[in-house]
Image: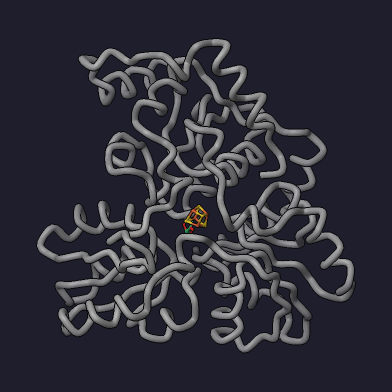
Length: 336
Ligand code: 13P
Ligand code: SF4
């Protein structure tokens, strides 16, 4: 995360004593958060990868695109972003006059970290006749170097909005990029980045699970590696996967994405069974260590004390806003 000074933020919080603050165990955090939302005209936006308690207390739960759209349209005074830094930063880019809070400033993203803006600039400069389409999972510095942003929900529409002969750089996710090359038939130059969560699913363990549950559908996020995508019955963004489990008549699903999404799948299809796809390590499911830094306690504290807040350099904010707005405009035109 090139754009924030975590140490400074931490020192600020420690000075105020927030990190060591003991929350009274008798405090009903759900009603406290509801009270704070009302008192401060705050909205809590949560990504599907957040822990169930946070999803349950949120005003809006969505994928990266839906969250950016909600951040653009909200009239709340404070946006509390239960997600990772690039998501909260996107909300701030779109809302310079609102206070944007992130429960834990260390909630970064391995994929965003895999593309430092200064290195990407050198890479981009080698392809002066290419447009740059960048996945929203990146820093504001990367966004400012891009022509248009995309998410996993709208990437195809964004790519197809350019004429067939237009040369394209796609960054930073090489797995999503390779999947999109196949889907769109476009020959894109890819940056070599990846998400640590989607990269470690075990093909062997998923195959064994599939043998044990022959009727289960394997569903995967396009950030997964190609061998996993090859055996998937359905590939989609988090909201795409959720919709598929709701509409498909199958009753069992092996879910190859961050396991937080299973909470909404279970709520929306209580009679169906969702099995988290296992990673290639000792764990049975695959949590994003960054997403899971946010807790209900930290959510409550950040709303009570209105910190940590996303603060941005104004020039960088203006430069990174242009490709985000272009994405939102193309998405709107495409009915997404
Ligand atoms: P979507 O929310 O677009 O499905 O992306 C998933 C993700 O990795 C968010 O960090
Ligand atoms: Fe980043 Fe991957 Fe975590 Fe999403 S799941 S926030 S892409 S590290």
